[in-house]
Image (tube, rainbow over all chains, first blue to last red; front, top):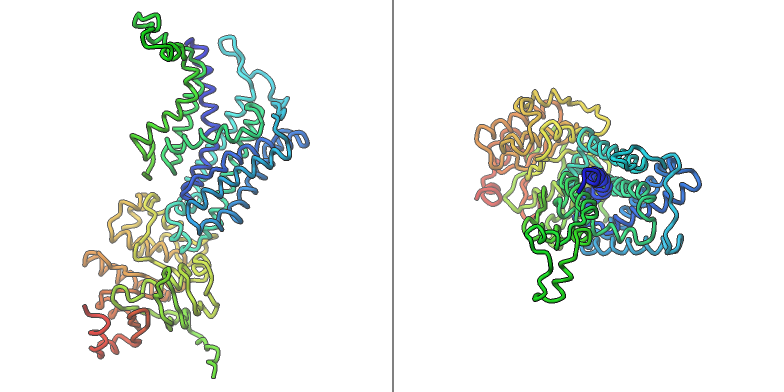
Length: 319
Length: 242
């Protein structure tokens, strides 16, 4: 791999990783709070992309970047207040099934409004230029913008959680909700707000990812499993774990695409140039598989390995 | 004949009337009547399982109840714990429940009511128990049991309650720490804060309280002054001594 491919892969890896963290941070906070994974989280991401697309056409991309996440956050808060909170008394299975149901409702609703085909969510004209050129290849300004937005939100979230009283209330509520309420804090309101903010973060990710990925009804289903890999690999409920796992998965996925090495190349290093035919045609097929083809499997393989050998995740406290 | 509406004495801070409570299906409190006046220190005695801790949780609105709980005459039954806390009731649970990953100072900040303006400043709290000042930026999880107990009491106190309910504050503490807890409670009382103390150690309870109740099987079985209890060996034998 040349230095040019390496540089771009690192940039794209960080970008994709930060985008994943925008989603994983909200999911992690919500997990810490409810004790169950929110299956609808990736759906809020998709709603963000569609709202961003629809609003961009009317009020422009940048206002949409503010308004769409606010709307998505509002929907999230309502789902918590009038849905999850009622289902809570039926236990975790009930909550899990409820979020599963919400995910399907959202997907169907989006298909009803916008149809099944992909939307033409374009990069805004103001950001449709080449930010810089490296080794003769241009890097799009929109990607730089995505990276900056993700980093700003990451910084803001970190400051909010570590430096403010609200952050203290949230952190303490995640582990000792009863005690926090006995000190006079309205914990149900805190939970609703966390759910709302988490959904809004997913919404922001949707708006900035919409023009880059394809805005279509299957985008939630495409990113959802990867998110679960991240929160499990990072350690359920751990924000720093989710951050590391997001970057890890971001790098795995971008590097895998960039590397063309195949099984044959690896054996070629040891002087074995042709597939041993005595092992049959299946082996001959495996022989020609390259890393780019294996790439999509790697995060899930990582998930399986983590569950087998370190079930608490990289930085997890819960088993 | 129906019972007339209960009269609430002018100096009554906390009033409990005909309070029943349940843990799941088991009926734990069977019609408790009970009160604490402003500035009063009241002890709640009884063996393990007599319902004392349940009574405190019921007052906070943390478990299902039937009956009446009033704070300064305002009905609290059916209210949520944070509403009861905001009405002026502070609760220090037996399990202590400090926030172990937060620092001592952060734990205290969480005790302050939103908007601040309480009658206890952070400095005054540190003066009550100076060890907390020297360990202000230490993670609360690494404090000793006694220090954690002091922190939970101080954390509730900084929220400016009119009544502080303390559940078994000396449980598992070394004798020196037990004395320090007793001293802290007296200094709190000197500022006019009412105290409801659940305690197994009779000496402390009798020493500092104005009035006491003895609980057994989810009911109040004795009410009086410390002198009354000293003069009633049969009550002590039946409901307190092991």
